[in-house]
Amino acid sequence: MTQPSMLPMEPLPPTTGAEPCAGSRGFFLDSYAPQTREVLAAGALCRRCPVAKSCLIWALANPTLAYDGIWAATTPSQRRTLRKRLLHRLGPDRLSQTLRTEYARARADLVKTG
Image (tube, rainbow, N blue to C red; front, side, top):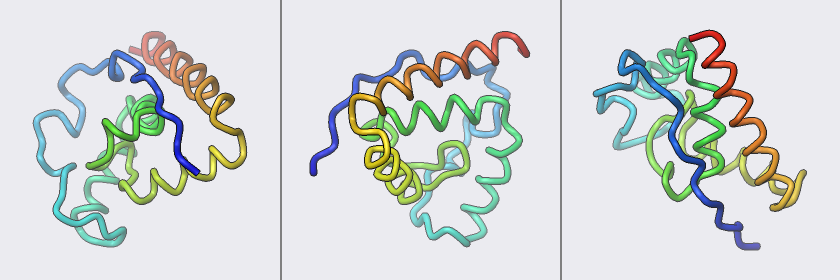
C-alpha cells in the first residue's frame, strides 16, 4: 500500500526562535536508536516545548519533509509507525482532514497562549 502524498501544511508551527530546536543540530542525528543519550536528550527538550503538538502534527502530515530529525520528541521510525497506524485506522482521506483540523487547532491554541 502506498502512502498518499499530502500537501505541506504551511507554514511550519509558529516559533519565536527560543524553542529548544532553534539553531541546534542536536535534533538531526546520525542514529535514532530510541534509548541513546542524544535521542533521549532531544526528546526531553521537545516535551517542554509549547510548539510540540503542532510540530508533531506537521511532521505526520509531511513525511517527505520531516523524514529526518527529532520532531516533537519522536524519531523517524516512531513517526512512520504512528502514521501507518493512523492510516490504517482512519484511511488516507480522513487522516489528511484530521491532521489539517488538529493542526489548525494547535496553532490557534498557540496564539491564545502566546
